[in-house]
Amino acid sequence: MILLTIQKEDKMCKMAGSEHVYSLDEALATVGFGKYQGLMLAYGGLGYIADAMEIMILSFIGAAVESEWHLSPSEKSLISTVVFAGMLVGSYFWGVISDAYGRKKGILGLATFTSVAGLLSAFSPNYMSLLVLRCLAGVGLGGMHTFTTWFLEFIPVPNRGVWMIVFSSFWTIGTIFEAGLAWIVMPNFGWRCLLAISSGPCFIVLLLYCLVPESPRFLCMKGKFKEAHHILQKAAHFNGTTLQNGTLVLDHIKDDNELAAPEDAPLLSPIVDEADNYKGSPSPSSLLLLFSPKLIRTTLALWFLYFGNTFSYYGVILLTSELSSGGSQCTPTMLHSEKNENASLYLDVFITSLAEVPGLIVAAFIVDRVGRKLCMIIMFVVASILLIPLLTRQNEATTTALMFGTRALVSATFIVACIYAPEVYPTSIRGNAVGLTSAVGRIGGMICPLVAVALVANCQQIYAVILFQVVILGCALSVVLSPFETKGRNLVDILESE
Image (cartoon, rainbow, N blue to C red; front, side):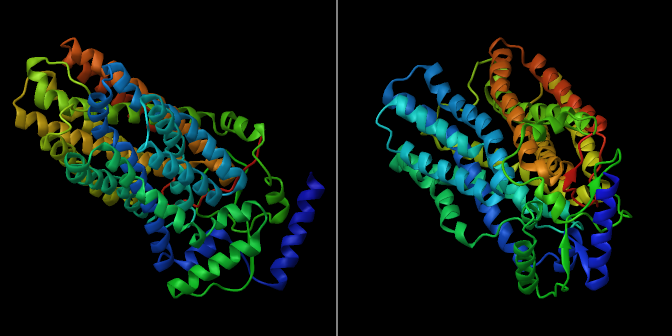
């Protein structure tokens, strides 16, 4: 082992003596953020819009399908359940694919699943075929985190948090657009037409696929430095900058207790030899690495954060509906109103989606100033405080204002968490780790309606509020216990096993 290290150091020294050697983060800093990343932002943002539209469509088609096919309430609810079940599988599956075969391959697969299954579901001849096709669409939707990983790996360290929040804001744009689209299409053309049109953005993602580059960080992990260097040169040309000739090498391999690379760490790293170890599909050891002494605290903290954050997000949406409308009479209602033909449904979804915009602005303003962890902690604590007045009966205006503020903050913490998770994990297992973490989050989304609806249906709204306060504060505690802050830090490529 000592001999191998000496040989690698000699190799690097000889290379450094003949030409300039630079790390990927140095190259990205030289390239800067410009038109090239702007195009990547537009493409990845389109993927997020497609994701949001396919999720939000569940708010509108349920009652129409129930009426047309004479479904029971449980059969109607199953339409949403199978989508989340598919997402649970897809979250991990596409993460594995993106680590083994590339971020682009992952995007191709998930976009194909989502677009084809989404379109075919518009032509479902019966209830069972609709369930199967929506489940397959859910498998594709579960991999949308691949867009986050892919875009993250093109962004220089300065202001990375702000640009990732801008990227995530496309999800909110998608929810608003879908509500407006449903407002126009559903009353005039029906649910099948809405399903078909909503699959459009995902088909556009497929059409533009051939123009999209692979992540240079992934290419470096596979030892394809020439391909990565070519992409970086093209990015520099688009941005009007110059990438210095030299040899591109992997970034830091951590060998201490801190995952994120410190700013004063040496920039030269092992080159092709280390990357070769990660060619091919992920081995079981890559999954076990999540539970290694260096990562187990991070993994468990992020799992609870994603579970609790997803649980809280959908719970706040439910409580907004219950406490603002039917809750005062203690009238059991479903998460999504059955008045799908009434314009007020579309208006309600439209307005509640707008409530996320202030949260995005707040998060974008502070995420690179105070750091990811403190940003999430502040917003979680304030969100729990906003819920306190709802422990007693409030008028409709006050209730609506408090719930909208809570939703804005909880949705913003979710976005910051989606930035933080891929920053924490090394490139070698990033897709795999984030996919598994997202899958755990999906469980929270599946459980929340069952728990919250049961509480509200039994006239126990106060206990529902307390439950969400406890979960939100638990999320804040999980962030406190997470050992790493990623603000201003380079992404790590390889974490050496113990």
